[in-house]
Length: 461
Image (cartoon, rainbow, N blue to C red; front, side):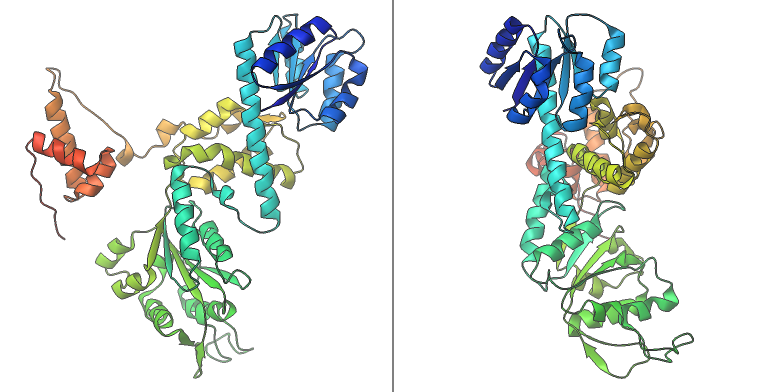
């Protein structure tokens, strides 16, 4: 529960307010002398300060500025008996967390205190997170706290215990597949050895084999200087992440299959077989099963990589993670650009939660960076994200739901039947997938199908 320091030169108000807040479950101390405020804060270390703006011997705004210099992390709520808009604006610009009028509405005060508690909790989590990141260690809290992420992290931690299991990470671009891969490595018995990442999409095809397996001197034009070690040799004893594995050529897929099966390979232009002990993780934003059907990916390699599969959901499906991630990125750029920022206001966080985030966590990070660079105050507000379109405008046409109702009307059974049939058509008759899309259990979907006389057989391609 929050500890609160009330600063007001009216002793009767202090005692009355203290009595009410104690009943509400808060820890409370009071101070009636402006000259003793800083000493009292040093002694009591409150979570929140309620500061009267007009004290007999001191100006509350001057005290606020002093508190901001020494105790920037403590939210200060200004209170006054005078309804002065200009003073309120000055107080907020000086760093006040909020502004309340006397006589105080207790419900409003409790709302503001709850907001303070949420703000402090988030700051604490982000502080812990960045402490861990400075040590180059990725903690579970880095990824968020949504049910989907917690479920994935539990799965990841179990899989990480085996130091040889090959894992396929699937997810849209920007969902953080590489960070998850690094987390797997850090949770595994190989954590003290190398973690090597190679982006298969970023390597020129003519250099890909050399990048992966190295080359001998004179193996090709430009290789005259010396032998080069490939990424697999550099990762020996550790973990290698093959990012965007779907971009790998069919020729290299064959060689990758060999190293997964035999744990050996040859350098380009070499005659000596080299053995390595490497755990292979692969990541893709493509549907590899579709790529197999198109002839772009080897089926045998897919099954070698897909010993265990982790599918990372897009950010729009775990919006409860957005505030923590946003504050995390804010603190990162606050340090990077040497700025002191109070935080992100609630309206701005709601706006961020409403976005579609086609670019996922990467897009959110870039948006926070841009907002920090363009910031003209000490707090990020909704207008600082004006460069983003509204969430509705960002939704692709294929993800929009459009319902057309005839002018004469239509029965609900007709709508339900058409909806279920269309969903089953999309899933090629797969009732499990159809139920997931419709937000139903499999049994409820079956009940509706029987009720509406729908019979569908799964289509085989």
